[in-house]
Image (cartoon, rainbow, N blue to C red; front, side, top):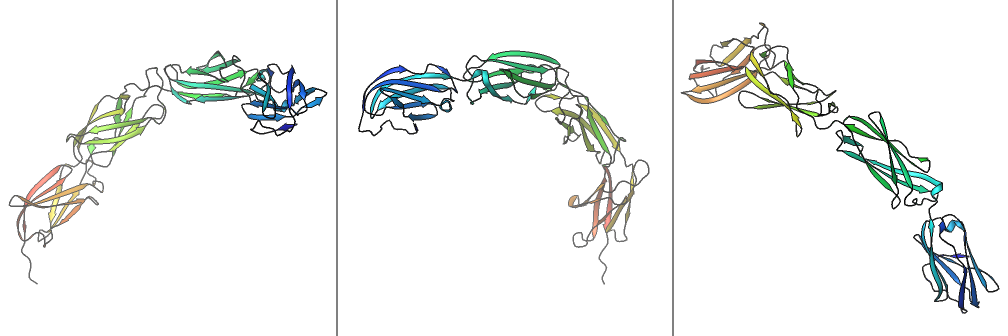
Length: 399
């Protein structure tokens, strides 16, 4: 009979005065029935307390004459480790000792395998760690010293390593080589096979590269696009960097201003696109993979797409029409070209206006409420081309 509890006191009006050991279990293997046998003297009922890492169990014996026999079913011995037993009657401990049950190594049930990180860099200095925890049919860790075979496939070469279990598990660092690709690993314990696990080996840090550019024409028309393109970016082991690597193209113009385009690599090549400037300019471009590498610096010049333009005025000079503005093929400039107007009186800036070209023209209105009649100096600026003139605003007409 089995009782579960946490107290050693058993209420009994009778007691066992003496117990002599006849047989107890030796160290063995989990999953087997065990037997305790004692010679007892007295009228009480001895109780056997059996403890392991899962807790305590209490058993009553079968008594024949003066012999108490405790038959422990195998389902109570499935946990490996140290078992401590005590034979007692009421509050008195008569005998006590312990024994050890080893895991059932020859009957391995499964292998728990952990592998990571699943992404490392080429070059032989980065690694993924493989950890293996095999268990027997009762889910006990196998014995220390159990051999483990570990296999690694990388760069079409297979390697085998042999480890031993310590404290129920083993681990190994598996390093990359110089080639980007996949690392495949697996393990075997007592003819039980793990699943295949994978770690991706990516290119190491990139090395310096070059850039070039392409464009439809050389004119600063604020309409077409210049495309900067990298060479195939690689690491020092000649591996192409992974797709999606960020590349920043930094462009500095003549005024010291900076523009930026961002590209991501596909097949090791990244591109960055920028709109042509609206005015003649020279750009210096350099590409960076921050913290790793950079390109050479290239210089690109843009010529003015507009050679000249016309101005026309309303009879009262308060409406100024700029254009038609023609580009390098005698075509109308694209809509959206910025046109600036500056108004001065007695060399003092009175105001500015800005508009954008539409159908090759731009129109400004000098409102009566802001600009009284008189002489003014006017500047019109289109893509860096400036025209200056004196403008006389007429007196108001009396209605």
